[in-house]
Image 1 (cartoon, rainbow, N blue to C red):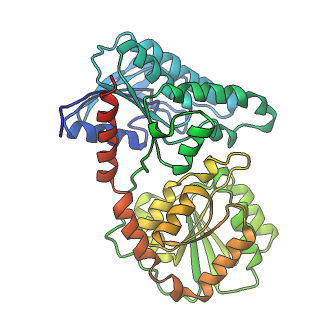
Image 2 (image 1 turned 45 degrees about the vertical axis):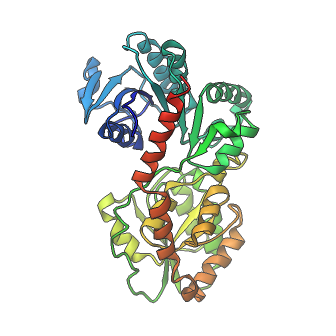
Image 3 (image 1 turned 90 degrees about the horizontal axis):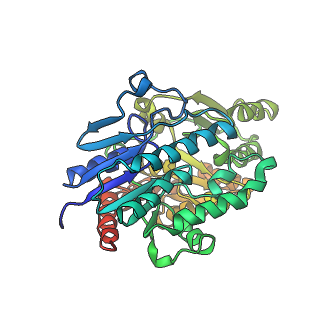
Length: 406
């Protein structure tokens, strides 16, 4: 088992915001380690700070054994400028707060979401405390910023790339949730491949033991669940549905909402797809099993023009589809396509291939028996690769490995 570690975790987001990093820290404590979490003031995603954190309250807390140290940040606001102020304020405040931390850390865990700047205080802590850094990258930069940056601001990308390379290059070990990201670390950020590890995030496993077999229907029902945003590249799905609209034996159900929902609804109206597409809006987590029981198959799409590494990531909704035991029909590249092929949970085409996606959907409608074991295969793969225990074992092992580089 090894001796307990004294871990400093650096991440802008933490409980009561809903990010996996909270469970990771609490599980490390349950495994006998000491964890201090240097985090921001909760305000994601709305920019609204809860009452109990106003006026300097609850800047230090202990929850489930984790010591939480919160630093000031400018709450999120829409637009590039509003997000930039939020990002920079956490980084600067966390840098300043490091001086008053007690030190004595064996290892630093930089849990990096967007932005990459949230990992910069971990690199400063490395110098200050002489502790090595394990950086877990869940959202690679600068590709991540391409999805939200207006084209007129594209001139800042070279600077963002330099900053990203500088942060990633100072980590002792980099772990990530996508095999494709390792290629990016090596080719774009010039990291040594042997210092990069593939550790896919774990996923909600409550669906594994549920009976979510599709309810009988005279139509084949495809389901899309989750955020309906730019990264999902739903243009390719709408093109596929439009190509099949002459058939009356299928429906696409959309559960969720997001920035491209108005466009999607307008496309349905303009192309006469109302009998094929049903919008359910955002629904509570507790209702998800009923939607999975409605679904014969789940559809997965992802593509960001000009951002090949983000387009090659492993979206968490694939793991949810697999846990629910649903066949997956996808237009996606990279790690997700590899997982679909390795697991046998469904079939995929390139992330921009609307015609190919239409052919897959039609094949599923006409040859359901061919996909009969996809759900079972997906669940089997999920149990082997996406369970929390497996993830935590790997993170704990990497923390020990990093600590030995001290």
